[in-house]
Length: 95
Image (cartoon, rainbow, N blue to C red):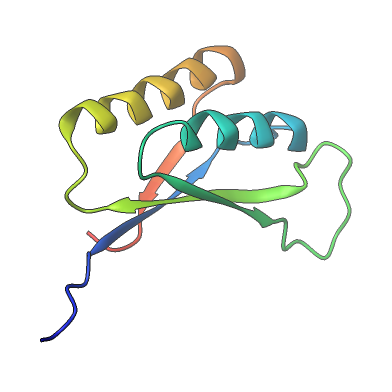
């Protein structure tokens, strides 16, 4: 019998100038949503800029079949951080 593969959805979430500690806090909050995993992608810039975040983006992954409740929880968390730290960019990698 062929094993069942769960299709995963990946997104990249970027808040301009968000400090590393706050990205870590955001990742921890998102991981509290069932079936959500996160990964911090380090800054790729070769030029040092003190005002630039050490994180390029936060990548999140979850099953494509994730329920509406969990999707709403993700959105609420992202919106909370936007209220405190400014707008973010949300990029779906494999819709």
